[in-house]
Image (tube, rainbow, N blue to C red; front, top):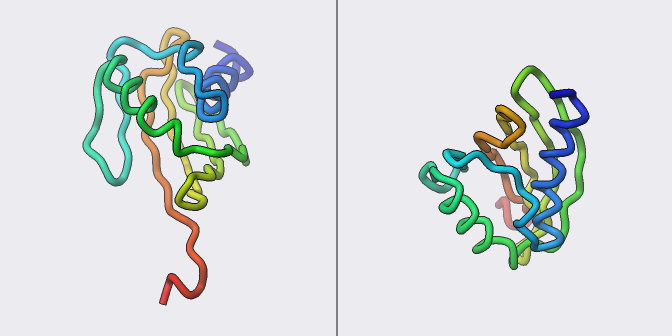
Length: 116
């Protein structure tokens, strides 16, 4: 796959947070999703179920950067949610034209007062 095709797969994933439409996602049957505050999720239906659960909380995605190397696309973006802004780094593995794994790293934006 070309760099542009990989980026297009990742951007379709990010678009689902704004459109609330999961039908255009190209996930492998054995896709995994891993984040800092949760156990690893495995399987297409499980990951789609998780995403369907969090989609209503997401208000906006502000894409910052894609870094592409071999099977991986590292994507940096800000996710505005009902609870504030999360700064996100997703490491996404693409195999045979499908997203095989998503490993999300993020931290919430806090005001100076909240950090005390």
